[in-house]
Image (cartoon, rainbow, N blue to C red; front, top):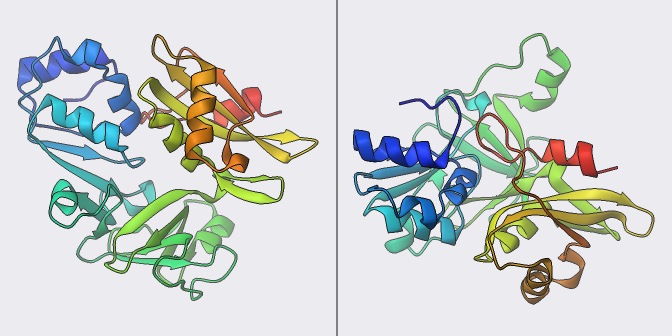
Length: 280
């Protein structure tokens, strides 16, 4: 069943009417499925929920499990990997192995490396050390159409440089930490915008959160956050929450409340739109 665009009410109505057993919303969509909406529908038919695009937060997992006794799987994949996932995390990895929500372990046939973002494909980093995620496997594309220079940069010796940052643990589980292009150099210290977003999303009143770096004469780039929030939540509450959870240099300098945050066709946050509108 394909929806022309995501609408929480319509999504719930379809699930109830058609007794849908599997769905693949990105976490942004999960956060739009508020209890005030889902409580009016029977979503107990779910047997599997696939999450991709970004890792779901613990509160996202809790929300999904409130709908149904369902398996939850997280996929790490990209357009460049065609229909194939590179890694997979399952709910039982948490319940049986104690692994927190992450991108999971490589699927059969896929290889994952962590390399120095400023180095070559052979500058492999050890377990636990953060770097650029590179992938190799039978579903990885051969390059970009009519873009030989970009192809040469991103596709090297059978590996694809994803531009994502992350690390592997000693058991081979992949943890995605953000994008190389969403690293904010503020006051000479590099901060991953996604870390600040996850902190904001951990607040029960935050529905959506996005963080960007904005040019600033003092900091070089300052950290600005944009949120969609529920009733009874104030910006002061969010600043206090961030100060309690983050190092001082990671706390946003500004928090702007919007009715909703821009998303792309797949439902992922469109940070580029925020940069264009607010990042100058």
